[in-house]
Length: 214
Image (cartoon, rainbow, N blue to C red; front, top):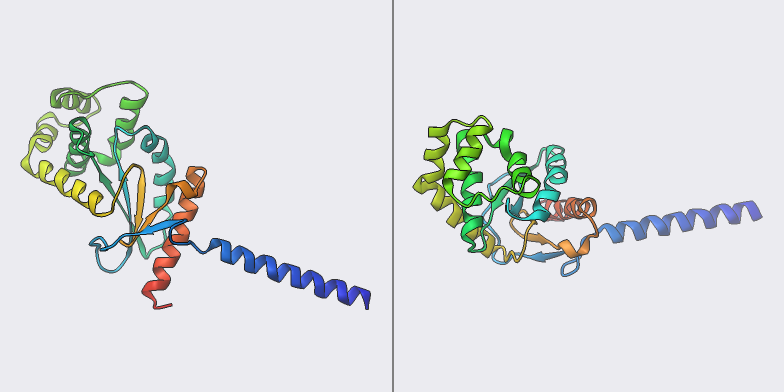
């Protein structure tokens, strides 16, 4: 009888622990995320995660390896997009153009991490377009192709739209993660990058459940 009582007690404790873990994993508004209202426009179909960032941000530089690996393992119903922001800083606006120019010329995959490295470890300033172009060429980019993209009017327009999207999401700092256009993940709810991405995973689950009507 004592063994049976002990077994029942252990089962109850295990059940309560599992329930507590489940409740703890449920993201809470105000604590773990802020609602984005009105929601951001997102592509139909997949749950979109947007990373707002800047090459000029040291925290974004540190976060980049983590979020890159995480994004590569996202479920099939989740997509990932990056949006560079300037916060109306001319030097960061140039870095936003760098991102979009690399994307337009097909050099982003090759030089994305290298931009962070150049700025935050090699202490390059990129104070002029010429300096950016010279650096990109030294890394294998085509001078005319990249230079034309960097100076094009479309790059300026993309920078403006990116800043408008960040304003709509009420971004006050970077890096910042928005899920499904509705939820802005609270960085302060996590003590490190791994926890931040785990929290983002739980917000993705919430977005999926809401889409399913649960």
